[in-house]
Image (cartoon, rainbow, N blue to C red; front, side, top):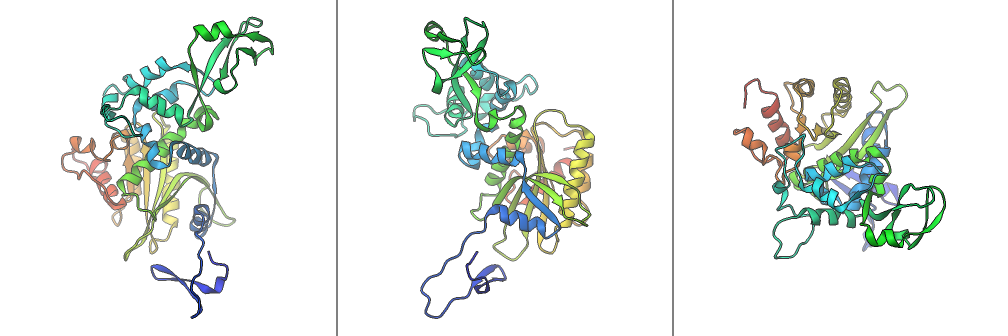
Length: 379
């Protein structure tokens, strides 16, 4: 962080820089987040590196414009659109709008009107409510989908998709190499869209969506302090002789304390809407528990965030219960019920009347989780 190592020292709650009495200015370099994460887990015997999933999450967040841009994924229809089409499948605007604005058969209570006042970009003053067409335009403009045309080759008679950037009236079929005039097809046809960028890299790339959405909600809920830092998915490999599990953490969120107290660390595991095998869920919980236990309590307050875009089963709740003990509550459970609204417990407090409708600190979130999931009495 400083060229002269012996002039920088760590002091209680701050960093000290030794200067000459005649010095009028100096410098200090910020430590890259990746280096901070390597040193954080290095102190307990881990080597931490970005996973391929973490790189996808980083690119997805960059595409939508940092964490608050991920608000668009609060809309169930947007997530449904990503699940419905693979990286090489094309679809029309009409089909996309039906998915974005329609109801989900698996979640009939979820509807687009729940998000009609969601702010994802500036809109004309006379348009007060968010429309599905504006959402789709936003996704295309951010580069999550590409515009193109489906053309039928007269030689091989197969249909292929051609991106708008390379589209011409005379095109070469990518399947057989035959050049043909596509003018009439372009005049009669309509645009077709495909997933692009990080979402077009592989079919399971939409697994980055629950991670991005969870990080967005944490930034909003924890009031997005400028000095908070986060990292998406990390592969943790124990060093030789260290008795810790090899595992992946979907995200790490660090909140340095500006007052007397310990730094808070949130370790996250995020799942999409689909089913999760119970043994896989139990293994993830156990791995995160061991990683959290390895971080020294005298220096850190460690919490474990389990988020998924579907309700937790009773068996999963029972497995998550072991993350708490008599001396600390550190489990934070989040579902679409908490991730979709702007305020994290906006919907939850309608079901559980006695909980607080806010969670400004990780401790508040852990206490509310215990009230919702780990009480023997019904809400």
